[in-house]
Length: 253
Ligand code: G3P
Ligand code: CA
Image 1: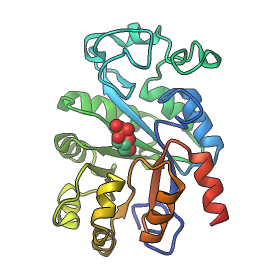
Image 2: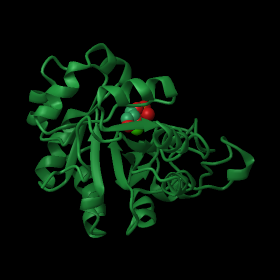
Image 3: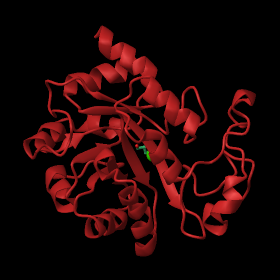
Image 4: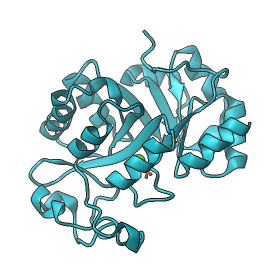
């Protein structure tokens, strides 16, 4: 079976991947953003996760609370109970006041039985025990098939593969490796997810990865001119803050 649940390669329209949920219209990494991404028809919802001091996987982009919540300091220094009382919506707009900071469990519960897949970024570094806890949250809900775990952190991917052989993985890269297919095979990933700008510098990487059966899903692309370039290059998915616009653009082009 193809580990990516849609065909890969140049003949398919790139999948729409809602970055931090539908972060163009709702506060990033909240349930409101995840729900908006699902309703717009995105095929994947991307979120970011790190562990709190008591080892609960929490959905937040930054390592600190300051930018996107009314809390302060490092997530690693506070408990999940403390985080549960924070407001992750007011910074974005008053209409989202009181949106909580979700746990990974909250997002999985919201997505269970629904169509999109979860592109779960683990920011790292995480301890091995934290990775076990995170993957257990997915297993307990019987949602391994709905998740692709991605990371820039190589140890996160190594640990995830050891903990759960059936979990699909993706490698995030800010530069393109000289032999990306070899690197992707080494990490046993189903997708290689690079910076879109670096990918445009070395577009042959896409065919090299496809020849190895590995998908390519670059981040983070909001400009239709770039969507067109990437679509013509044959990427398999596009990570965007504006999944609604990309769904419409795909339908028109
Ligand atoms: O999905 C990849 C992309 O989200 C990586 O960048 O900083 O938005 O997590 P960042
Ligand atoms: Ca991310």
